[in-house]
Image 1 (cartoon, rainbow, N blue to C red):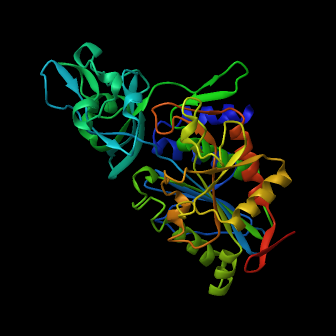
Image 2 (tube, helix red, strand yellow; image 1 turned 180 degrees about the vertical axis):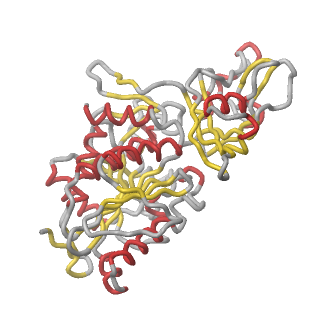
Length: 433
């Protein structure tokens, strides 16, 4: 439950991808990691701990081995979630109402966003004496809502509704004469409204993380997908012991929910760039670099669908996962997940040593799933991978539900993985030390 509480605090402090990276960076600095800037030279030392960010919304941290590099242990999670991006202060319409102009980001359950308190979070680009600066902003108040249409005016609403993002999902901000959103952001940052040059702002639910169930079996929060894995993998890194010959890497990528094809996404050069700069900083030659990659493994950490109590038929009959059942290993015959029999076996062996339960997830044969961070990262960094996650309900809803024991399962599994001394001796054969 201590890990759960730390996760819930992390979620509460991370209402946007920019805040999630800021929260992760703060924990890394508390643990003695040194910040590096991509735009500056890097001076690295064996045994050192470092991190860097890109676009303020993606982060890579790494702990270097003490003596030599024979392989990497990497995890990857994502900082974003389905939401609505703010396009402008006011949407034209009825002159008595003020609405924000919003556009959907990712595939969300629209109904779950209706009739609940919302606010705005992200970053504002501010004019400074030296130039421009991206600053985090979170309007910590019940600021707006997306009101549903009364059932009296849509009698068939309970038979299903096709939500139109432009018609149904524009948030109600205020009444005519209210201060603009730009004014509120400027006040929160203590700058003049004219100094706000632009912004990357999203809607976020106001509900705080809570524990549910007669014995506290569940927790409920916004953004469990994927901040649950983002935090648990980070706790795994921070609790893992440094290694003599294994490097440890934590990745937190933005834009997974819209395909990852951005400068800061999993399809970008971010991870290859970091690994290349590390190799250069440590003076490794090309053969040493390639040999280390061959001895590496990555955990692609993104949550999976728990069996739904009201829709049990939606789960695969042979591979059903449940909250508090342990870390989920995800399999896909069409290779949308990166797990192979070999990588699943290696990860199971690590979890068995650590006393962490695991369970197997696969989609129904007639319902193929989407791709994951690992699937996309494999285009840029070709190393063995396994897709894992926590079992959760209501994925991509404004508020989601998961098992209260699973964050600790995930953190313990990742800590063991970061220290796991397995290495290939030939193709398909690994030895543990």
